[in-house]
Image (cartoon, rainbow, N blue to C red; front, side, top):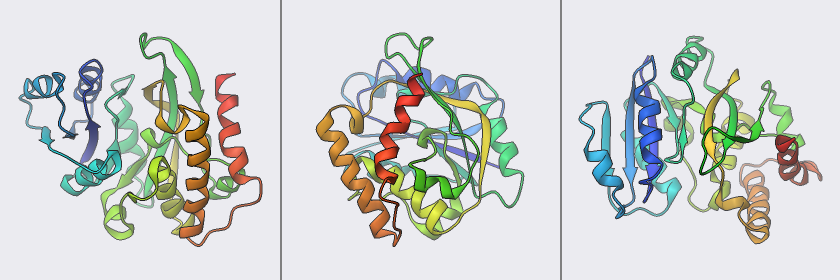
Amino acid sequence: MKISIITVVLNRQRSIWDCLESVQRQTVPAEHIIVDGGSTDGTLEILQGYTDKRIRVFSGPDQGIYDAMNKGIAMATGDVVGILNADDFYPDIDKLAQVAGAFAHTTTDTCFGDLNYVDDRDKRRIVRRWQSGRFDRKRFYQGWMPPHPTFFVRRSCYENYGGFRLDMGTSADYELMLRFLLKHGLCATHIPDVLVHMRMGGESNARIQNRIRANRMDRKAWRINGLKPYPWTLFLKPLRKIIQFV
């Protein structure tokens, strides 16, 4: 089984090294596709310093982060595709081995794990823990979703059901998981371990206006897939994050 990791980056000179090294250290080797939006801060110089043939770098303009992710998925040659943002990294060397183990079961279409948010300046300090828990598609109706940076998908699923919708803003990953796991009923396996460390931040949560906009897009995600949430579903979704800080 071959795994492809897609990393979208724009001016992340300070963090891209951790991302690259965490993939390179994995006991299960992976194709690492870097889609750069035209960095001007030294990021490209760091990327060009890598000579490993498993790293493929493409740089040019795009229509945003999800357009760049779609480009990376289209270039991927692996059986399984994962997304690792430029600010994120795998905390240990066995994470892709766990992913490969999950996909050893032929019925597994997707897998996901847990995620830790770490301090932007001190990556050793855990600020928030996202314990996703077991998979049950009915949990979507209670505001649940898997952490997208830990979400791995067979490439054939993207080919059959499409990539990220560019009209969904920061809810594009939520819409994709609703489409894959709830609408089309793809089989998912939960890995009960922290797969990714993610630096604090996030456009959808940066300001209250952004959270309101994200909630509106979350509703659209259900509607365009012909799904109907409970009245409380999308109010519970942001409330679940409070528990992660405890």
